[in-house]
Image 1 (cartoon, rainbow, N blue to C red):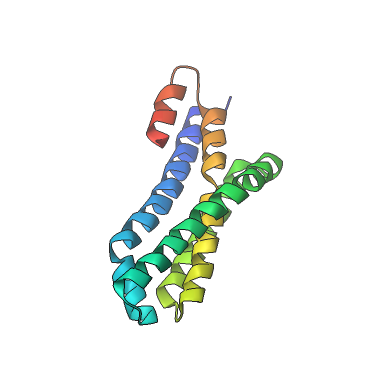
Image 2: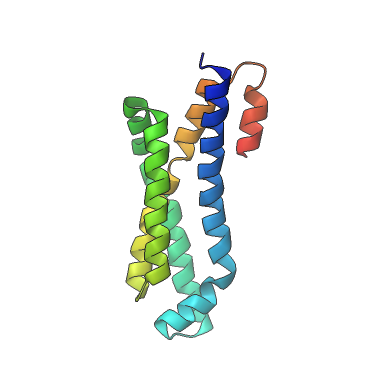
Amino acid sequence: MIEAKTARRGLALVFTTLLLDITGIGIIMPVLPAYLQELTGVGVSEAAIQGGWLFFVYAAMQFLFAPLVGNLSDRFGRRPILLASVLTFAVDNLICAVAWSYWVLFIGRVLAGISGASYSTASAFIADVSTDENRAKNFGLLG
C-alpha cells in the first residue's frame, strides 16, 4: 500500500487532471457555435453540425485510446501517463485558441480526446492508492 501522504498528493494530481479535462469541455460548449460561425463564416445550423463533429471526434478518440492509455499506464506507471495527459491537453487548448481553420480545431479536439482517455488511468490510480475504507469515497469523488 502506498503511504497516506503520497496517496493524497497522487489523488490531488488525479482530481486536478480530471478537473482540467472537464473544465476544458465545459468552457467551450456555450461559445462553440458562435466561435465556429466566426471561424468558418457559416450559419448557425452548419456551425451546429460542425460542433457536433468536434464533440463526436473527442468522444471517439477517448473510446479508441482508453485501452491503449490504460495499457501504457500499466507499463510505465500512472503518474507519467497522467502528466503526459495534462501536457497533451495543454497543447490541445493552445491549438484550439489559435486555430485559424476548422480543421486545425478538429485536430485539437482529436488531441483532447486522446488526452481525455486518461480517465481509465485515473480510475486505476484511485484503486491503487485507496484503502478498503475510503475506496468508495474516492471513486465517488471521481464521478
